[in-house]
Amino acid sequence: MHCSRDWEAMTYQTDRLTLRPIEERDVDTMLATRTIPEVVEFTYEPIWTREYAQERVARHARLSHEESPVFTRWMIELRESGTVIGDIYLNKDAELQGTTEIGYVIHPNYAGHGYATEAAREVLRIGFEEWGVHRIYARVDEDNTGSTRVCQHLGMRQEGRLIENDRRGDKWSTELVFAMLDREWKTRSE
Image (cartoon, rainbow, N blue to C red; front, side, top):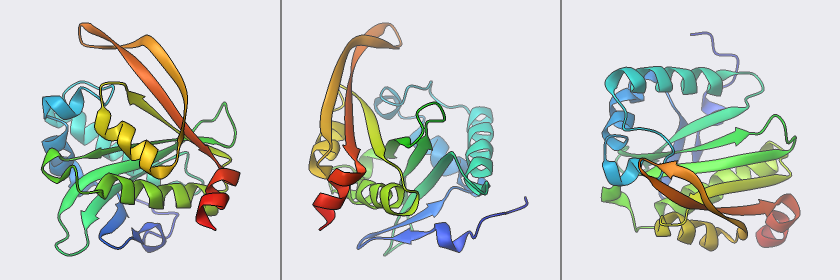
């Protein structure tokens, strides 16, 4: 695969985590998380098959390699062991210039330790300080209390509650929208 971006420059470290771009070798790791029903119910996707995992990982890796990415997915690794515990992404909205969506998945074995908040804080920094994004938002299923807490810990404000706007299988779900503006990030970072 031709790489037009500096791969090492796309790798970031926090106190406990390494965020590295997704690679085709991550199929099994992504598949392991995306086959857990209690994880998948909040991802707006079906339970993954191997074929679907190969397709999605290849697509995400390709998009992350673009010169001016509109989508970048990082794998979240524990710095100490190199164990992959989840993934996180930024997705620029082409129709709303300067607006970017953040999303993340942490394997349930590693939930509740602040890893999602730590990774998301770094990705917010990347979006605001390196990409120059104006607004970053997260769409969270109202029943996903863990993700709601992550957004609150990050200082994102709840902008909306969309009642029964999405289907999860046979059930209508309510979505919460959290967001932060670049000026709010600057104020929190000072």
